Length: 282
Image (cartoon, rainbow, N blue to C red; front, side):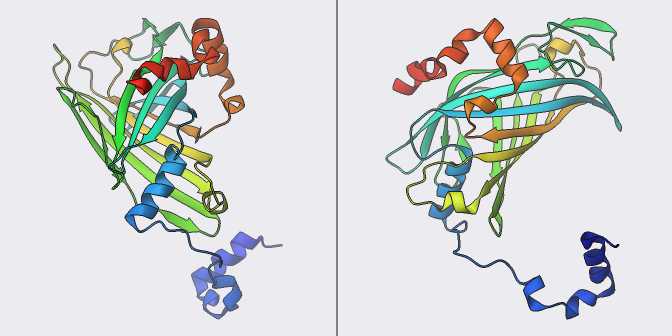
């Protein structure tokens, strides 16, 4: 028997869909979600990306890294990352977020955090550090712009939030970030760009009194060679793709991240909000 998707594809290819019943082609009905007005876009984005309340937010990503030289991709290692944050609405209608990230680079075979990595480009063993960033603050404007409260010399950031896509009970939004940082002694900027696609349920976003929703994440980045790889001025770069979750339940954090953090930085598991407290209270 021909499967449904093949039958539908044949209908579209031959134009038979033009004579299909109207109920097959009609868009699902239901109350509209405001994703076009500035206020509606801000509310929806903050609920999917952060929160409208001030409680702790847990986000995670699990991805695979590849080296890219010309048109060849080489599998390298994995990464398990968690970000903890809190957000506060400011008097001007923007939101201030404080957050920190802890990431572990993982062995693609075992999935465990690595201490050393044999770089296939140089055939050298590299010492693998933890990744992420220290507690820092950022601002999300009413127009969904992103900026730092205090500019960092040598750092440029470009940020875009694409139009929302709403189909039935599904809501998607793509957030794009492109950054470049010039470090002392470096011959060229260190670049980091990513595209994060968030997916949530319209029903969750429209619940009375809701201040946040859980969003599934599809994640892709392009980044300069990380310094610990010892690549010097060799041509090429890294790229990673993976999955994740915003406003995640702590029990859903990647097992590799939980194992490595419990063994190496247990204070993060004990009380991540305490790590944010000095900056949150400032």
